[in-house]
Amino acid sequence: MSQGYRFAWPEAVQKWQQLESLAASSEHCILLDSHQHKDLYGSWDKILAWGARAIYQGDFEGLKTFRQEHKDWLFGHLAYDLKNQLEDLDTRHPQKIAWADLQFFVPETILLCKEGQCEVLSWHYANQEALETNLNLESSRESFPKLNFEAQTSREVYLQDIQSLKQELQYGNIYEINYCTLFEARGPMCPLQRFQELNEKHQAPFSAYYRDKQRHLLCFSPERYLRKKGDELISQPIKGTAARAQDPVRDQEQKAHLLSSEKERAENVMIVDLVRNDLSRTARRNSVSVPELFGLYSFNAVHQMISTVRSELDSARYTLEDALHYSFPMGSMTGAPKVSAMQLIDRHEHFRRGLYSGALGYIDPDGNFDFNVVIRSIAYDAEQKYAQVAVGSAITIHCDAEAEYAECLLKAEKLIR
Image 1 (cartoon, one colour):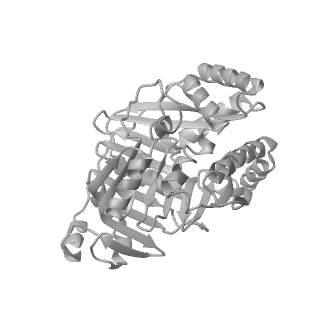
Image 2 (cartoon, rainbow, N blue to C red):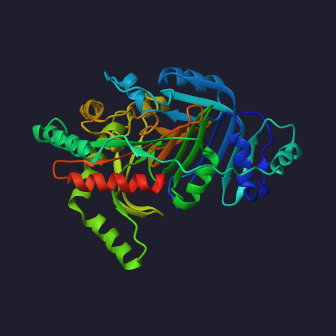
Image 3 (cartoon, helix red, strand yellow):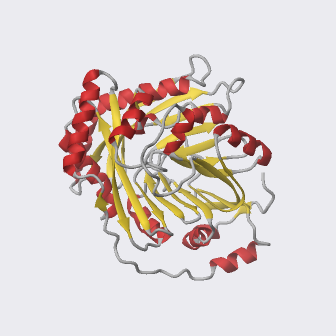
């Protein structure tokens, strides 16, 4: 544990936006925001960390050494391209935003908030008075022209790709695949300001703002990738999406239709089986279970079908890095079988996913962790003035390509309109 001040600081809750601005002025910062969604497995409502006393880039083996050396809070990401280290895979597309495959930093300042109280674990200011002086400075709000996102893949090409993937499904090479497409824009943007605007609208349970020098991620994810507390591991894959409706009756109809959809349930259960298999690779014998199947959750933008898979880590044989290694990338963003799906993803998609389909989160000094799935997000490179929004859906043999395309547009519209 890093040395510093440790006390409850209620005033921080009232000054949260100033704290966010202060954090975002650092080259390395992260905000994790649950919006106080009722969650059986979450530990904090908000976490804000910034400043880097140490940074690690590399692989899981090196992360283990880095964690043991520092014995502190670590914050960072696992990019989708980390798959190339874990399996005999490659990525043919150029990297337009240069995220490291795996990166974590030890922050100078950490604030943990729950139930209206904010606990300051450590900071680089001499005392609380110095910190409050910084918070009293008004942060300026700038006005930027709207970014005009354009689809990298046309509707016609999208439909051709789905037809090709359906042939792979027909041959039995895969059972399900997550196919994604990209929207791009160029122009100036204030990443934190845009995040704050969208964060208020989405209020997703795994929202995050992440800065790595000139690279920014604005994430409004509803999905947990993996959480560890003690030896318990929890994964909550999402498969099944329905749009919210303003009319309450129509909204309930949308929800009921999602729950009863054979297609959505089939997609969900296939990924649940994949996650069960992933977790079993590091689990104590007979410890893998499914506490919740086909749970229906409503968020500001969409209804989601979410299942929960649980296991107990065999900690006598495996480390937390092993738990991440053997379950990454998450099955909800690949398909099944996982390696075949990832090979076909690279063959059919027209962009490099980068941090999209990866994970953001933390590892605490006791070896507990919580990571989201990086979806519903905007990636922005301030140096290039370049923004990306990637969206996708699950493709099965019985899916309707036009409906899948419409689902992608729905997901993208919530971020780019």
